[in-house]
Length: 546
Image 1 (cartoon, rainbow, N blue to C red):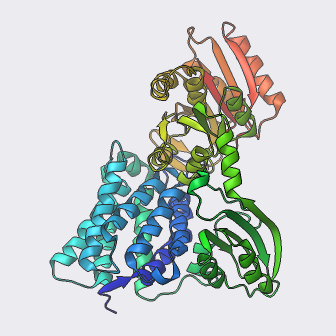
Image 2: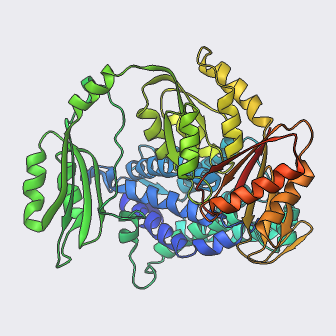
Image 3: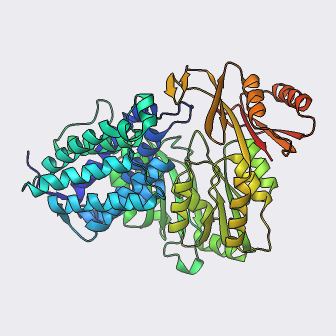
């Protein structure tokens, strides 16, 4: 079947199909992470990013859904705000760069598609400070070159162009272990590159008319975010009361025991009443959110369809006026935290907003944007506290429209060290520089476990084995958590270190943590020791030396 042009409806089908295709294979991508810690989530992050892109496809007006450019821009917006982790941010940049070429075009042909893909790859390269060969960047670059080669041979068939792009991507993906020694040692290809190939394969399957896997539909996947639909919250931005076009934020859940809810019908009608329309769920239960001046009409429309629950109507102009009256801080502080105890530590050090996330669930760009918009401050400083979250924070800083500084803290102790260097009287820029320098002086020790068997550097790691990390790098393996911690102290602790802070995770009892503290005190009597319940998952201990 030859495909010479694609319109907005077809592009929406392709994105949804690719999202479903990748979602079914995200565990495969996750398993390719060479570092066998239990938070290897490249596939999960890419899948969630693509699902966010798919959900925003229907944010365009019903009359514009056949317009390729309009759909592509909506897709890019969803991907940018829904991006999670470094792999998700890079994916979002590819989609965003792609959309810039197609802006204003009702349809695209093969030549435009290839040009857009190349622009997407270039945008992704620009987003990464130090591009590395053998990653998703290299694989996507090969895909763009493969598509161009098909075009140069005279092909105008987008299916054929995509097929050759995928073949070139696969060939390069297979070579990634020769580009990155760590991949060769682990016996795997690059995880992000594999995820990107799955996206291309999803596009191809859609153009061939192949149906999604049995039991699920691409539309259902695109419409339903992870988590509990009924209790899902929708974050609204901080708005100027005079800039608000539609005054009432209207939310409710609708249930139908006969599973007859028509989500597309609800979405289309609400789009005529206002903006910020979100209709997610299933034919049996869905969550609805809309900004409108006529909430009564929205309720009248859906009431015959089922029973209403959790109804909430907020006057946004009134709320915005209240927020305007709040004292505006000179500098607002945002930190990512992954446990209730760590949350309290950050708050005690002056953090104004906590973004939930960390090792097991990287927050999205939208999570950061919502935190920025909800914080009344002239300047804002963000502490990501995880190396896989820095890009999403930086992306949020760019799209938020405010003065936002990202201090690229890669661990919780680095974030805490940065906060200790904060001075209220300085500017945001001055503080960000000072906090960045302070963060670099912190030594972070982490104790976790191997999620699977793996070969990593000189280590042959068995599933369940205890892993000791120093500043994010594997330093040793052990059979027992406490012995692992003591071995890390032996390697790193020096007489100039006068404070040891131990944050124990949700799987460690207070008694266990105290016992470790006592053993450390007996061995290193010159250092003060503090012990806090961090409550973090997966990581038994996070320890700072300063």
